[in-house]
Length: 280
Image (cartoon, rainbow, N blue to C red; front, side, top):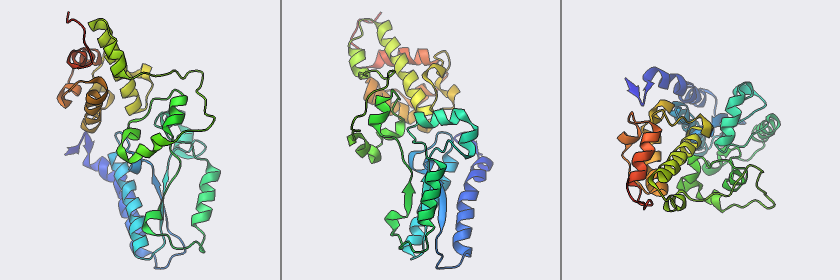
């Protein structure tokens, strides 16, 4: 039995330490603790491609902290992002690059220790449920855009809409950053069918790279979308993006089919309401 290509065993291996372990501490430790800290992760808030089990476990920790607060017990859940100086990320430099593409701000060891010092203070007043979850820094769309980084999919969710209202004083674009134009505008300017197909192909490459936190050059258009581990949830995100940005209604089974990305781009360009060129 599997869930989106994940075995039950793989699901349990990641979720049990978070769920069972945290609950055991909650039930077995004495009441009136000076502090009770849970190290959670951004994945529970932002999502994590291919790691729904890990994300679910972190959400449990966040909610357990809130539950303890409603019971008059101290608790803080800290949603950690990328820490390039220590731990797994420090030993895997490719993960650091992926984290930056996903809009995660680097969090230093000293910052973590300072955070722990605050929340391990026995004199810290009891937190209410809404303050029992701490989220370490995430990226701001204005900064990502200025540095030429494709906005990750999680930033388009309504809950993060306020981040788009934040501007950075004095922020200047990097040398590699280029002014961007909407895919709709580019498709409306297409003079030929091949031009439209080329634009859609580039759009799919860029969107997949952002969703999967990989380089755009790593998206081979001679391969099908599913070869990159795209599951039905990511495919739904792609489908919604096609409607919104490309002006084409594309079924999920078409996205996850065996057509190459190049052939998918051709079919999508043919469906786009933004393309107005003579059919060849």
